[in-house]
Image 1 (cartoon, chains in turn green, orange):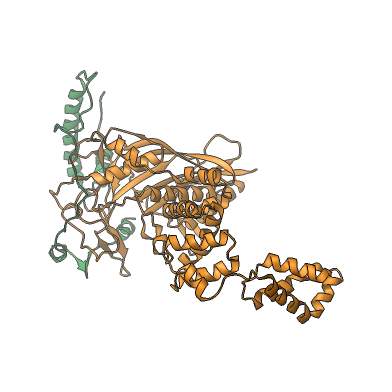
Image 2 (cartoon, helix red, strand yellow):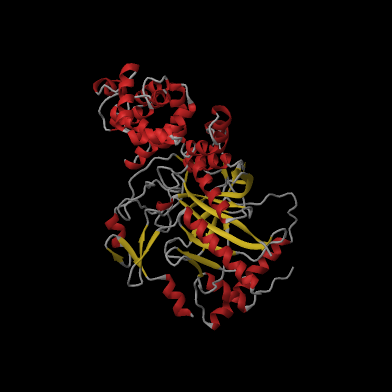
Amino acid sequence: MEVKIDKRTIQRIAELAKLSLKDDELDSMQEHFARMIKNFQKLQELNLEGVDQLVNPHEGLQRMREDIPSKGVDREEVLSAAPDRKDHFFRVPSPLKEVRKKQ
Amino acid sequence: MKYEAVIGLEIHIQLRTRTKLFCSCPNEYGAEPNTNVCPVCLGLPGALPVLNMEAVRLGLLAALALNAKVYKRSQFYRKNYFYPDLPKGYQITQYVGSLATDGSLTFEHHGVVRTVRIERMNIEEEAAKSYHAEDGTVLLDFNRSGIPLLETVTRPDLRSPSEARHFLELLRRTMRYIGVSSCDMEKGELRADANISVRPVGSEEFGTKVELKNLNSFKAVEEGLTYEYNRQIEVLKNGGKIIQETRLWDEHLRETRSMRVKEEAHDYRYFPEPDLMVLELPDGMLEEAEAALPELPEARRKRFISEYGLRPDIAEVMVQERDIADYFEDLAARIGDSSLAANWISTDVMRVMNEMKTDIHGFPIPIDDLAELLKMLKKGLITHNIARTVFDKMVAGEGTAKEIIEREQLLPLSDESELLGFVEEAISANPEIVEKYRKGKVSVIGVLVGYVMKKTRGKANAKRVKELLEEKLKA
């Protein structure tokens, strides 16, 4: 099965990742993607009948922890590392405004 | 044409653990902002999640209570999207490989037995809490980030807004019974979004659905869905088409409105969370959860009707809270009279709890003392009125039933001659009433009974007073 990655698909993937790419960057991404897809197509030639899906390359199962609380990190230390704050809160720009600007 | 609603709910239940889902920060409501945080729940690079076993256990209990099929193996996924309350850029949730699927909850709605199927139940992490400041910025508190949620999705099996509300109330009650969540909607511990469409009654096809958000109370669920149901019928009747969209319920304007958010790419690009291994339930965990499952509210309601002969409406009140149901069974056994116990709990005990804004554990009369009072009432040692008076004094902390009755000399007048004296007094003091009675208006006898009751401060047996009055008046 031949999968073609066109420029619009690259554009959409970039938007989902909140990346804005220039035209020449889109072109170079298209080349990268084409190479990756080609590699996956090679993999798809393998006969995987009867082989389970590999979810995680590490062996073993989930280890769980007991429900015992412990003190987190110091609030001042964390807040002082943030780009912006107000009182004891992290402050960020409104996500809605961003949408409005784009429209 | 008659229309019916087709409703499905997507519910988020905050699990009552001591710590968060993937880190040991306390899971508590109302702490100072950003005090229960660590690199994991702040989404700092390199921090690794470690699954809380208690969240899994509570999820299992909930799944069993809803008769769901539990999977020995399940898997966590990353759901990718950008929002300020989610600093990692993805939410850890379950996707393919849920904790449980194919559950159901059966209940009686207006006398009709209804079964709502549960599609899936997933464990996932809560996002941070955002506050929208007046200047348009957003303030974030990460205490809530990473609190365990149980996402519970129903099939579109609900057929009216009131049924949806009833279902959600029973779901809440069930979750509280099994102790997996307090489900306080005001604290956001139980949240519901709804999908609703309408179709002509009898049709098998689904109409175009609308997603309804911001249903923050049971009232909002019912009112928001009712508004949307009527709106959609109106659109169809006028030859219009329903647009598939997300709408918000506005509690103040009492209407739903389109979110009008730019239709952004809706592609969460799920993939298995590489930081977490496959979750395989440890041996015995499922069996332990099965053993820990108490009798569920709907089963208990039915048993209260069949075993104790309670009226359906009273049984409904008795099973509202597990603690109340336990209290009822305890009290009924002590006094040997289940309807007397249920009547007092549903009226006087609950009135006092409301007034004092407390639950049954904060109810001021010890169960022994209340049982003693009701036993005296049952034996006919005191009248109902006296029992009420004594009850109020017990609530006020004036002593036990026996102490109060002795101190205030509240035992009933059993001396017939003393009682007759009051009866004669009632007749001679109310000549007009007596005349009306003799002319055939027998209902006025109530006035004379009331006179005697007042004079004896409620200590007379009203039934006996009436008999004595009738004898005297006929003579």
